[in-house]
Image (cartoon, rainbow, N blue to C red; front, side):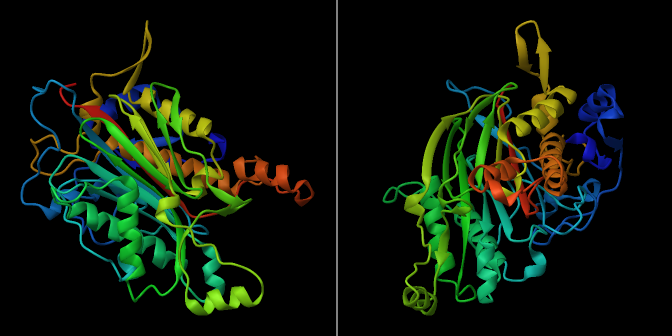
Length: 413
C-alpha cells in the first residue's frame, strides 16, 4: 500500500526525532527539513500554514510543560501527547495543513458556528480537551451521516457541533461533590443534549467515539456506530472496538429528527434511525508507558484494518527510536518523553509535538491512498463482497477521514 503514497514532506523541529529519522533513512517516502520560522496560530481557525509554522502556545503568555518535574508519586501518573490529522473526501491531502497539535493550555471556546473556522475534515469532526484543571484528557471523533444531505441538511453541522460542545464541556469541567465526574458516555450525553438545544442545527446525525484518558493511566471509551479505536502496545494490538450496526453500512447514530421527517417515515411504513448515547458500547482499559491510541472515523477503518494501523505505527515508532529492538524484544525508548514534548523550555517558543504528528499524518496519508486505490481491496470492499457478492466492489472507499493519535507517557520516564 505504501507504494501508492506520494512523497511526504514534513518539517521536524525536534532535534532528537530529526536525528533518528535521518538515521533511519529517507527511503521510506518522506523528506525532512529544519525550520526556524515561528508564526502564531489562531486556535479557533483552521490551520492554514505549514506544520513548521504552527504555534498552539500563542494563546498563552508563557509556554509550560504538561507534566510535573519529578515522579514522586506512589502510583504512576501519565501524560498524553496528542495530535489529529484529517482530510475531506474529493480534496487533496496536505500533511502541512491538515494537522492539529494538542496543547493542553489553549483556550477552548464554545460553539464554532462560522464554518470557515472548522478543520477541513468534511463531514467528520474531532475534539481534544483537558478535563478542567486536571491532567485528564478527553478526545474523540464524530462522523456526520451523509444521508441527511438528501433532506437539505448539512451533515457536517451535527458532527462538528457535538464535538465543539463536548470539548467545551470537558474544558469547563469543575469537580462537584454533588455530581459524578464525567465519563465517556456522560460526556457524549452532554454533547448530544447541547446540540439538540442548538437552534442552528434543526436536523442531522453522526456516529461518535469518545475517550477519556486519566492521569492515573485508566482509559474509558464510549463508541456508538462504526467509528472506533485501537490500542497498540509494543508492536502488538492490545485492544480494539467493534462497530455497532443495524445492518450492513447502517451504523448506530445519534440524530436530531424533525417531527415532519418522523411523520413522513411513518406514512410510508418506515422508521428513522434514532440511537442515543445510552446505546454506546463502553469499555475500560489500562494504559502503559509507550502505548499508542488511535481513534478514527470509518473513513479510516473502511480502508485500513487494525493490522494495517499496527504496521504503520510500528514502522514510525521504530524509525523514530521511540520503540526499540532489544534482547527482550520491542521496548519503549527512554527518549519517548523528549519525542512527545511540546516545549523544551529553552527557546521561548513552542516546538511541534513531532512524534504524535508523524503518527497521525502517517495513518491519514495511508488511509487516503488506500481509499483511492481501485485495485487493492480494503476492509469495506471485503465486507461488500461478503454480503453482496454480485456488486463486484473493488479497491478502497472514498470518504472523509479523521484520525486522533495519543501517545501514553509515564511521568518520570
